[in-house]
Amino acid sequence: IEALVARIHRRFATSDWKPIILHRAHHEPETVFRYYRAADVCYVSSLHDGMNLVAKEFVAARDDEHGVLVLSRFTGAARELTEALLVNPYDLEEASDALAAALGMSAGEQVERMRALRSYVAEWNVYRWAGRMLLDAARLRQGQRLAGRIGGGRGEQGSLARLVRPRSVRVIR
View (cartoon, rainbow, N blue to C red):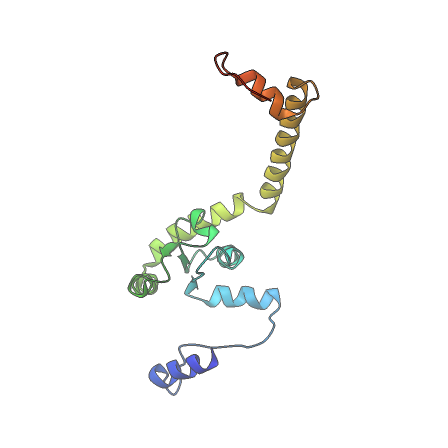
């Protein structure tokens, strides 16, 4: 990464500007929040599901409603954060076009997209996720109890087979 940053700086940096500022150190959450707020664009280029928290932290940090999220289609968050600019990170032209669009996006469009993203992140937070997990577990348990009653305590497979077996089918055991 450092070699790539050096190569980019040799090509694009000026005496008073560097396109990349690389900090190789642990950063406390408050510092990360400031970086998210300072960024014009957050590009999450995961090649498989992952990095969802980075995308959602960027959105949560942007209470000024500016900034653009460019997100790999392969992240789980891409199904949720549909107002992000979604890209296939293997397609360099598509990713480049999305980054150019993000950098050139009007303030009005940024606000519109970021409001929608922030609304989703605020509504679908960890508390809602935990609540849904508990409801799903309760439904599963209720289903198991019901299956036990139907089968008379003999297990699901035999009781369900007796319930759905047509009369013309003969089962040999």
